[in-house]
Image 1: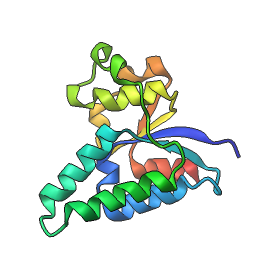
Image 2 (image 1 turned 90 degrees about the horizontal axis):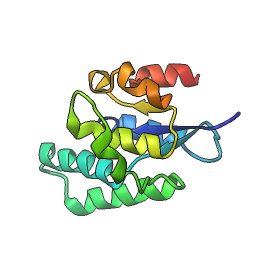
Image 3 (image 1 turned 30 degrees about the vertical axis):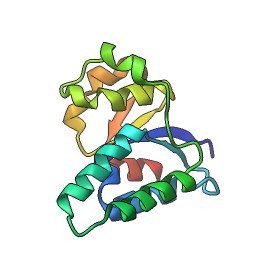
Image 4 (image 1 turned 60 degrees about the horizontal axis):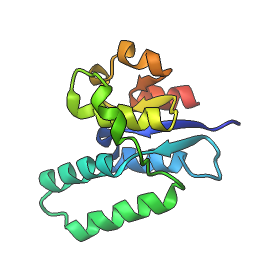
Length: 140
């Protein structure tokens, strides 16, 4: 099977069960997908986790973040920042996700916010946004 590249948005890395499943799918031995994200995406996911779950400790979340990056080879996207300013999306705060996807020639952005990634904004880059359920079904 040929791997394809996907960007995981912060909102799909937030819920534990979803994060775990998506990371499992990205394991090299499965050869299904090449999952990518940025430090900025991780910052957003873990900032919200900490804000919404005060019983969690920063050290716990730092360890989770570290393990995520260790378990998915070459997951961190760099060098996308210069693309952000020229991109247009309904929510300007999501431009960094699109920029990262463009930088690594991703085929799919896995997100729970499809409205923030309209197909007309992604077509130019040969990209598609999919909710996790659709992504999983398409993968199957």
